Image: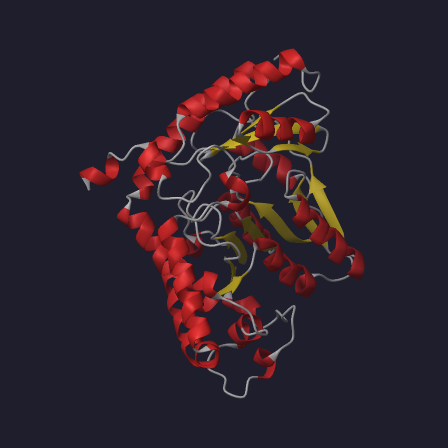
Length: 398
């Protein structure tokens, strides 16, 4: 145990396949898969190709169930209430297609992930429903203020609440437990987008009172790409038709609930990434990952404050663990976010997103056990050089 806790960032970095010449500060977009987990993926793909028919028809479903049980134990949900999906956007498309009725209102924030906004806008348009993006004031001052602002958007037509537990652009943790509890009291359906949560901050779905929850395993859990899940409370499962109609729709040998059959067996595909969950959990335990993450969160608060101070902008929320995990977004005054991002990568070897959301632009760094605080110093130095040699951004006054 002592050996695990004293590994340096450089030693941990060697467990990944990441390019050593790049400061990788963008774990939030697609994660990164450690070598032992990647090797587990190759193992499953090898078994698949060794006997494709037996694997897909006979062995694969058994291994899939074992992986689902392991995932359920980790995120606090029954395996029977979970299905694997490629990504959270896929999951939300299932829900938007099935749950909306004419004149419904879906209440959300104006800080949600763009692909989710598009999904809801499209499906609301198809049935004559409305997608209400309730404005949230930044910087946040308290959970109570957030909750108060959010519920201002609720009307007698509100039927569904859709909210991220952590938003992509801001990196902030939202009080979804409180939102779900109040939504339950009001008789509303709750859908939580937890794309950034599994493996990042503690998660127990069974105590959240969410009717639906989706999360990515290929981000902070570090599973191979294309491994995510959808949780559905039992009372809603029979109302969800699959996006793809295939053999699971009318199985000749049913061995699970319609929810499982409809959504898990929808045509030939390589589901090896789903089978890697036990290897993911073994890796995290072997390397004492949760202990390492505590140090990461401390570094995020420290270096995030320094970044915001350098940029001359306020932190998006009080610098406390209730609002931050391993992501930190700072507002940056630029009209050229894509150009700035490319210069940071091409000229300085820094992989980091610079995103526009509404009228604001944010630069967001992630901090994993393989990162060093000096990499944030490098980022600040690079931004200073860019500021003095280009017109891509100007220092704001707090």
